[in-house]
Image 1 (cartoon, protein in one colour):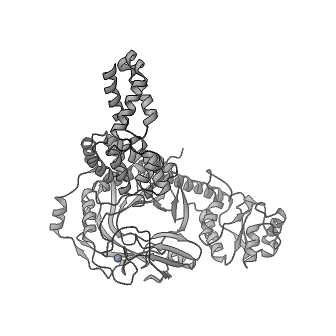
Image 2 (cartoon, rainbow, N blue to C red):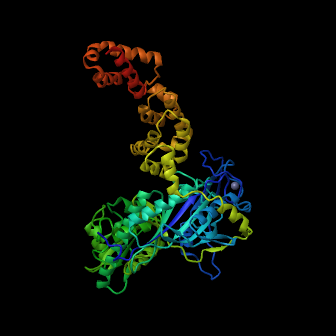
Image 3 (cartoon, rainbow, N blue to C red):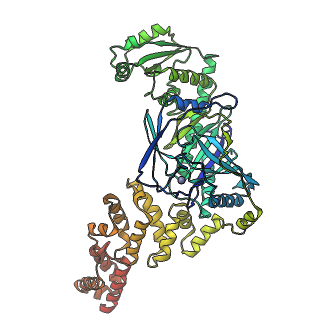
Length: 619
Ligand SMILES: [Zn+2]
């Protein structure tokens, strides 16, 4: 078990939460996602020098890939502002209100004037090449952790597809207001950080003015360990994922430190030789190599002094320098690398390898990397730079959360990435506005959960569950209209059942609020039994159909009260002897027989009342 304290692990959380405003941050477009987009346009990004004549390393990295950016858009949720054909309009006052409210809830010092800044964004996710951001407040605390800053920002466009040549984004999300809360780094363990994130999420949700659902709250995490650089991990969307991602990243960074220590015992500086070895592989059995040669690519080999065994060495399972290099070259459009710790393999023979060794002058203690493709020079330079960093330990980079692990995305951007947005006038925060917000502050999440619990007569755990789920508003709507259904049943269906339906592979995202409400309404009218809701949901997802169609499909046509009475009457008559003999004790047997016939069609409670009536009539 790794000791976070011994490793001096520092974890900084950055929470990005979409606000539930009607309009976007700098125009009147609606903050909604849309399925059909009627136009598209293309852009190409170009890096520009800073005032000091330098290029941002991350910007240059993206530019060198030479990709075209494609944007798809709809008039229903985007306009010329999103397309960067028109200057931004005035700041959305509703979004500012919400940001100020949240700042007040955590005792953060609100600025006197809000100034919009441009933060350089180099991946094409903003049509402008920058993201607009405004500092709202500094300081304050959440659950004992100090807040660095609270900012109001515009969300970026959502990536929908990418390949070597084109990256596609939809403009739906671009410009949706977002609050960013950055926390001081903490030395807590992964589980404590996940708990902290949960509490921040609750605080935000308790305002009832933030967006809900997957992707509406995203965490970026900065992680460093002793003597290492800060690694930024982007796009953690779930809390259980947050804990796993932190644990993986700490293990990876410690593994890189172990590798660095071992390398330092062997060599004091990096010594590499690069040679073209294409001629050796003309008749190779390796498909990857032959494909590269056929498409006019080259095979290059790098000799690395003193690295034998170190590219494939695993200080922790799945943590290898070779894997780090492979992930990195993938962002240069290459499939990966071959290295001597795993060769001969993949169709590359010992004989070919020996010829490469000869050309490179490889000695026993050296390692070799083979790389195949067109224009591999940039990738080779990046590999050599990365190997130099391997001697130091953990390089500063931006990584993406993929499942429970992190993968390389790009070098960390330079520090000076902000400059003033001259299209937007500063907004003075008036005292009256602050007083008005202060007198209307929403209650805290703790109080909110208590109220849910007593209002709907559900226990505290259930109240927390529904509060943390994306169905809180829906629950309140259903519980207040469907009086015949126990609120605790609605909670367990919207939390546990929905989670297990999703785990079985059903796409629950297609169940709109209206569809879910229609299911509960039918149960409320006692047309079907609540026990069949899960089956109905599955059919509705699979067949993309309405509740009524799903009910038909399941053969759950409703049974009229008169028909029900006849059926129960018949069951009692058929079992009259048991009723006479056992009296009230015959209930379980009769109930079992009735449920065999009526399961899913009639509510069990209704059946039990009828049976009890009949028993007392006949016993
Ligand atoms: Zn717009």
